[in-house]
Amino acid sequence: MSRRALTSLALHAALVAGAVVTLAPLLWMLSASFMTTGEANASPPPLLPAKATLAQYRELFVRLDLGRSFVNSTVLALCAALLSVVVNAAAGYAFAKLRFPARGRLFTGLLAAMVIPGQVAMLPVFLLLRSMGLVNSFAGVILPGIASIFGIFLVRQFASSVPDELLDAARIDGAGELRIFWSIVLPLCRPILVTLGVLTFLGTWNDFMWPLIVLTDDAKWTLTVSLASLAGEHVQDTELMMAGAVVTVLPALLLFLFLQRSYIDGITAGSIKE
Amino acid sequence: MRRLSSWRAREARAGLLLVAPGLLLLALFLALPVVAALLLSLTDFDLYAIGDPSTARFVGLGNYARLLHDPVFWKALGNTFFFVLVGGPLTVSLSLGSALLLNHRLVRFPGLFRTVYFAPVVTTLVAVAAVWRYLYHPRFGLLNAALGSFGIGPVDWLGDPHWAMPAIVLMAAWKNFGANMIIFVAGLKAIPESLYEAARIDGAGPLQRFRSITVPLLAPTFLFVGLTTTIGYFQLFAEPYVLSGGEGGPMNATLSVALFMYKQGFRWWSIGSAASIAFVLFAVILAATLLQRRLQRGGDA
Image 1 (cartoon, each protein chain N blue to C red):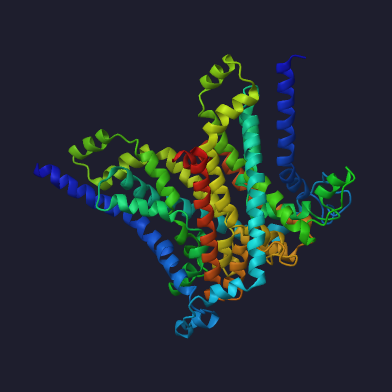
Image 2: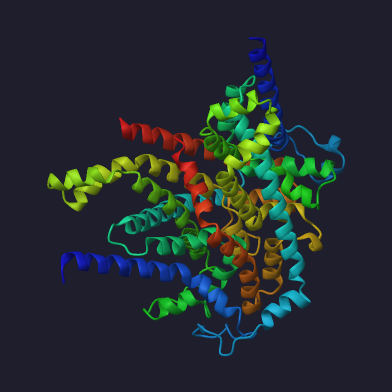
């Protein structure tokens, strides 16, 4: 065998081994979710169900009412994504293209604030929401996270490439600034707005700490909070927990598979900043 | 002329109008709370004070002084540093290794492998932590079964205080390496192929090409990845929360600073004390950020 073929073989062997290890936990989760209760608790652990059953999913949705949490998570993630896109697109475009007083200083301030870890603000934000009567409400879950410094940066970077001539031409034609933002800038920035929307949707969908803190009423819980609570009560029910994990993970994975480009662009965009 | 100046005024008005919602939200939910947290950390704000704030008293640096004498806090800080110092380099090496493999010109279907390696990143942490909890089961877990076939084990991953933190590191590395990998791949792609060609013509071997081209040109990417991983890992919370049932056990072996803050603030409602924990975490992250920047600058010189 030539050296080139040998290199290629070693390379692909390593890549396949890595892929198997990476996928193993997810595949086992899927497989165990179709097992009958107690089946996974054996030594050695079975890799596939003896006879696949949907019993765990039925239990989750019929008796444990996980469907409600599913709807809650979906509604919250959609609202957060939509609001975050509008708010951060407006600010990002303004920082990129419009001259207004203190623009430079405000932007430097945002840059500096990026090092503040979210935990620092958490306690006062909770007290603030409490005084506004927003604890145990959906608004309390999404409101604090809508404006994002990262999101503003992302849009600003993209909007810088919108040609000034285009904006000036619209101004000469008598279009107002808001009209220009809405019907020229937003459509031009569509790719980055999709990226921001996907990132926010998945961020909200996957978030755990904040909904855990804000939502006290189990009818309002998101999937992650319900799942963590389930893990406490049903610690022995491996198969049931795996079905719950599938219900939570699968939508996120599917969304990623469909919008992979946008998602990955967003992750890499942050790194090219400097 | 007059038309131009009225345009300018309109532009400034529109600019302020468009940044206003974002900046107001950030002021309300970030700037104001950070200042409030600093003030809270100087008081004994507790459950009673939530009902009637006038019962809170100023205690100066009392909360911070008490933290320094609290062995549980030191345990949490030690655990967090273990996670950052062991988990960070492990994750970044996996990311770099997989990026180098993916970027090799002989690889077929790089897109497919990239998607597979990236999949754990988009999964829900709470859900996959539940999965890993079973993979780590001492008797029925897949991991011990695999290790057992090599004659190793069985290890009580989450029950043994010595193994609980390494178990969390392992899961976090699995979950996160794909995100950095994507960034490394983008960094590698940005290195012009012509440099490698030239080096090859000059007779440089693969290792030499890696050392004198890839390493220096990838350094900025490396700094970015190192920094974001470090900052993110200092905020460790959900992994130990789910794997230890919200306690950080066994025997506080997986208690992180953020989890300690959560328990103090939202379980015991010692909000003043929790705020001081948050600020210590902030100070540690800030110090680590500055240190890493300085190291990078030293490396450049």
